[in-house]
Length: 593
Image (cartoon, rainbow, N blue to C red; front, side):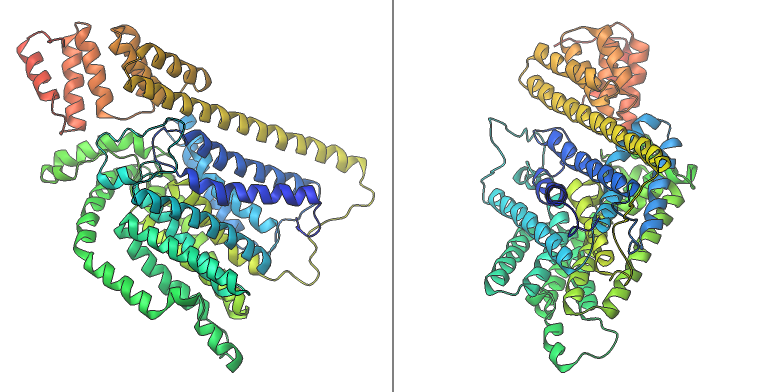
């Protein structure tokens, strides 16, 4: 697909797809639990990526586009996608894994779509502009929240802070500040490159101002990992931006030394080093907690080293793995945590998709690095600017993902694969290349082959879109039900939970919510049935406590005692459970409050 040859409606549709993922998705950043933007996030990320993949597939079938020859990442991308699909087949819960893997596959699909859409510096500039605009918008919202004003709260919605830390309360509608910082450290590099490449003074000022706003928001998040990642990204971006195959001429010497403008100056870099050094003790203390997660989860890989323990299965297996590890190392009880992510994306891929998945990721990054080096050696000044932005952003996101889970955040995942696509976009096409295959007299045989293939693609996309919409609607029902539950209206909460289950029968969160409200209504048999259904895809000590309380109310002390003990084994910090265990051990009846 060459945008210059596409029809006006086609170009508009493609631009809207890019606007949807690059501009709109960051404003509905993932928070990890249901809220007012969850449904929008799911539809925006998975729906738009599915539409892009369907358009590309139809264009390839009918010869409107050829498979991009400049896509050096095609083979490793294919292996990465294959490895995660194999891990889904090997998963103890294949249906659950296949639902969860849809989101991750949006990244590789999006990269292929971008490269197939044509390349050149104009294309790189357009993508950089979208990322800069989205980054500046998110940074402005974060700064307003830092000042105590939240523009994302409207329509009577409020955030239930509960036991959130103060930093998370501050960015409660955007999520954990580490999520915000993880996106901004990748978005600041295209902003700096755009400022350096702008031909007008107004453009330079606007892009530089965007970079300043993004940098200020990174400061506001107080994310220590972001500082380390940003410093590493600046080193790589400056090196790539200056790299040339031959000594620069006098006319290019000054602009090349100013690549990415003042953002990559030694002064800024030294300031970042000073900040990282001053936070070194806290960073190392934080690292000790992360290392606990990695060691506790290691058996998941050891049991299935080749294809992994199943995609997205870490969140279901970690409570048990952590309990086993603490039983062997009780001195580490201070690191106990409830988490659904490993806080290290490469290791998470290793545990869930095995050695095959990690090798595919490593091959992808190696081919990307080779592409950056090749284009930088032969490219002009502006090409090196976009390459510097790409390499800097990719490095920053990767470094931060060693301590967090940035590839589980929709806008950061899409930004990561967008930056990975830039070197392929800058590779000049062969002299005889043509992005369109013209068939003057298509035979009947080709028509009867391509038409069914097109129908299969369209039907598959429609089925995926239907599943995405149903999942988004069920998550919305979960959010509504939890809100009514907090207000004490259990009947209305039950209606919302059942409405969600009508769309997604295997949603563990909905079964868990329904079990709670049924328990409060003293419908114990129904509540126990919902707990058993929830346990298929939810691993939580509090779910075990609920099961124990239901059994206790039903007059079944022995299974209730076993459930209480299992809950305490999963979470030694449960305060009320020891008293319940003692009561049942002594044979005393439950005191109903």
